[in-house]
Length: 451
Image 1 (cartoon, helix red, strand yellow):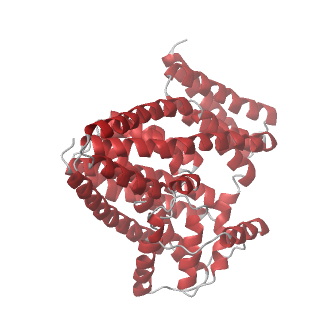
Image 2 (image 1 turned 45 degrees about the vertical axis):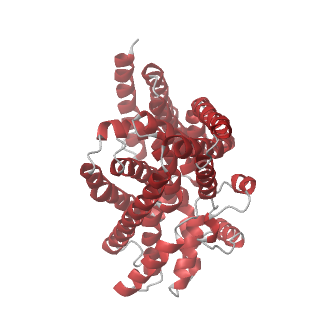
């Protein structure tokens, strides 16, 4: 059997499984449940066979997502313990991030670029981030005002969501956006997974190394950083072999714990968010790509694996090492990738910013409050500040949503019910975060005439 026959087999079994499931679900035919279940798992087996012949990590990840959904739906008790696979993968990814960022930034600054270029890249990146996230805020507001998803909606947070909300609010600490950019202890920054602090330390270390006049003292550290970066990219390749298992486990756990019916109550909110994210990609990111003459096909090939990992695990961090590696293979210099991509994880969260503006107005609509244009602009200004520098903070999006809603004089408890579908929405907004940051890296490289 070859790849073509495997694809034909997948198409036949997939159509058969879909037809039997729909006929049974809508009670158009009396079918034995075992037949319907068996047809779906036959399609999953065909999907595995097709993935084997394709020998592509992206295809394996997508296949694992489909199998995870099926497993979580059919056998929830078996699926729930599989979250450990995702947790193992995320732990290994976190061990990669700090040494990878440190080594690539030090080599990029001390080995290949001038200090003036570092300053230029930083200024251009910040300007780009602010402009694009502003567009994200506007599109989020436009989408929720257009659909009015929260108007007339009556829903009550379940006990599980209330407990989770109080747990997240309870761990909230005072958040000084400016102060928390700078590390006080690099070991603490690594332990707490504060990406931006690791970036700041690495930049300062790289600048200090670049300023050394004595080549005998400079060369060993530069050689160490170069070797470390190469080793960490190989480390990334090894960890990525676990990605399909991690993705399948994460999706299976999500479906098993939430079920598919949870989407029904808040379907309008989920639909509005995904529609707005799609609009943002088509109306903002695609035109930017056209302006900078982005090679779309190569770019899509480079980001397909990181985005699929981000979608399934709802973690931007999980996608970072592979995104860095693939963008570098695409031809973007390491010094640009190492600087812009991780910085964007704190300052260019396009999907998260869009979600926050949309969800805030949604809560207002649920409360029966019509926010005026000036109040919505005020909310956007608040979000432009509060949404920065919170990468790595557990439940940060929910905490910002609650504080924003409270600042508008609304009942923050109305936001608790959103936690029931937060995982589903997190998948979409995290994917757009990754796409936006990868594009930002290409844009800055283009501005610097590095590609």
